[in-house]
Image 1 (cartoon, rainbow, N blue to C red):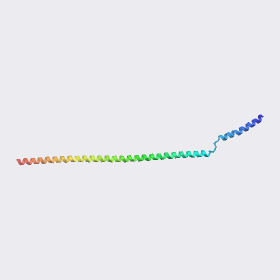
Image 2 (tube, rainbow, N blue to C red):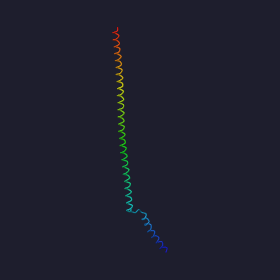
Image 3 (cartoon, rainbow, N blue to C red):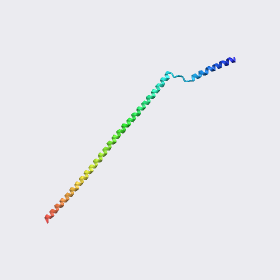
Length: 124
């Protein structure tokens, strides 16, 4: 009986161990698993595309902002130059007016002196 029992035990062990080993070995993925993996991959690709588009959009917006600022800076620079030129012209006009006034005053003084001299010479 012990011999039979030992034989049954050996046979059982020799059948159970490979069965357990086969149960633990990776099996081929099921259709559901394959579908899930494909959906997950598609979702990741969609997210990556979305992030790329957002990055490109942000880059484009930054470029537009930079160009607007550059344009605004150019306008401000031109305004500043125009104001400086205007101030310079106004100063030149003031200086010219002052020179003309001084010249007119000198001429008036000279004419007055001549008139006074003529009047003096006629009195003499």
